[in-house]
Length: 230
Image (cartoon, rainbow, N blue to C red; front, side, top):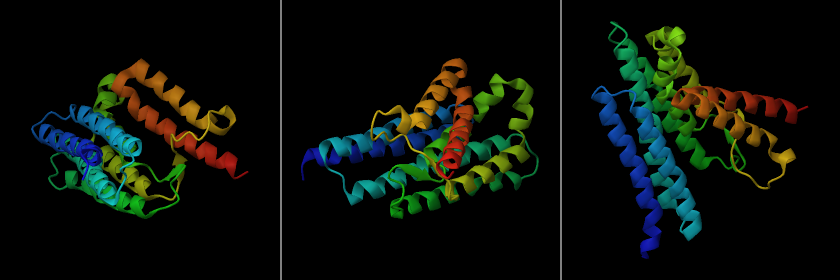
């Protein structure tokens, strides 16, 4: 087997490694660094698919390995982040375990994605990387806006966020995918809007802006769906 056929899988393993190291850091008490490992994993997640298409070595092994890596980096790691955040803010021992709905439904989401042929130009349900980025940057959001930081980091809020966003992973809601089939503004206006809003929020607020980007992503998708059904 040619060496080039292993390159995308090697990049996928770097995605997995990022998730594993991120879990270790978060368990050791460095919750805010979890976001960096999720971002790093997302970079590798993009380039493994890009490399597979470029080298024309796409295969079933790579597809399955990608899902396994994503489960760790975008399912287990954000679940551990929520668990640790809830654990340090509550005296109720069982409450943080409710946040572990995130890795469970992330596994279902990834399994469904591999079988769903409808997601060529749109996602059905919230993608696991977007969910992971939202969750992992909540600490930065709380630090940036201290007036909402208390309730953002409250254990009840974290459990609610875990369940709401875990359900969004599976909900039958078409969401924007940044897959441009042409450069036409009319055909891609919501994609361009998302890119501009996302860039502006991240430039203004850094990682604290990412939760707002994900909320804008959901909002723009709902608006696009409403317009397309009129």
